[in-house]
Image 1 (spheres, one colour):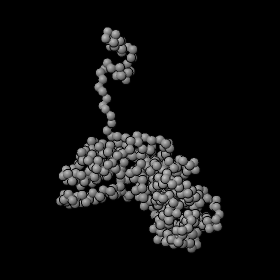
Image 2 (cartoon, helix red, strand yellow):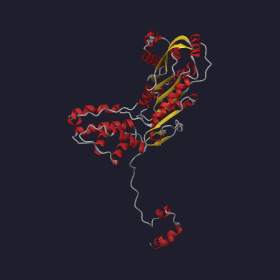
Image 3 (cartoon, one colour):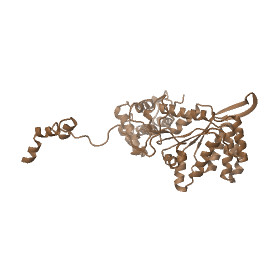
Image 4 (spheres, rainbow, N blue to C red):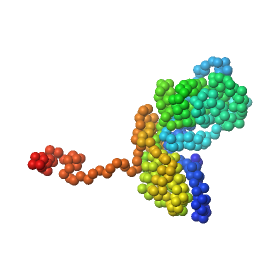
Length: 405
């Protein structure tokens, strides 16, 4: 199971406030499986499957030979590519890592078609997009991930290539991905490419390299990051079709959100367990914007403040104090996507929303002034009730009153 919950000590009742506070960091390990995570798992699994339907060992060997000879490869269908973007705090990276952890990363082969053929096949690699937007840095990152997976020393052996050109590192990276039949390369924090590109205008070499990896190594590639990356994806036509995928928005204030809170609510280390009331869940939602990471952070910090202030349990005032201390401010709008609440197990990954659309954040408790109380003679009430306005005016003598006034 990918679920993760912290332990509740059997001697909690005898613990001091200091000991209870030491338990609070364990709340960061909470991971509640939800339907949207199944959609991500299915997306990654199908990407790996696509890779191995486009190439076999013979084609990979030909590809390696082509790289060394400087020739292009044109024998296989293009591998899968796409992206998983979402509001920060929705759990993209944690979900991707846990989904990949359920699949074997390395398979050792001793023969191929009845003949000896030793090979370590790597099903997936997870790397971060370099903050300097450098092809060489990403190449070294891929080598480091490969070394970690199979116990090789590719990165160490390329220390002498640090002075080599980016193209040389790129070729070496392509050869390694092909030689180990890597099924899926996940490039996380892809928004780094956008943030750096705004300053240095260096995104094109990195993106060109990633496109080449997809085309020439037959390795599927998925990008993970925040909606900032969408700006880069839609700016170039050839990237649009390669970067479609799941777009995540926070919880709605609905049953799915309530179920999430119910799962984490028992993990309270205060003197008493606060009752899960509607007012508390609404307060927690409005302060967190329905973002899971914020919900857990506020939940943990509220307990810390309750213990510091000698409160028996958390309440709305303690939650507000915790939010103010952490300076949590949820944006008024965020990029459009599929709300976490709207996923269902068994449903296919939804289509991405319009590229430039933004949506306002939601609230559990409606904002603004309460509607004014109106009597039955009010024109607006009459209109909403379907009453003929002309008749209504005559019956109530509004025109006469104005005339005599």
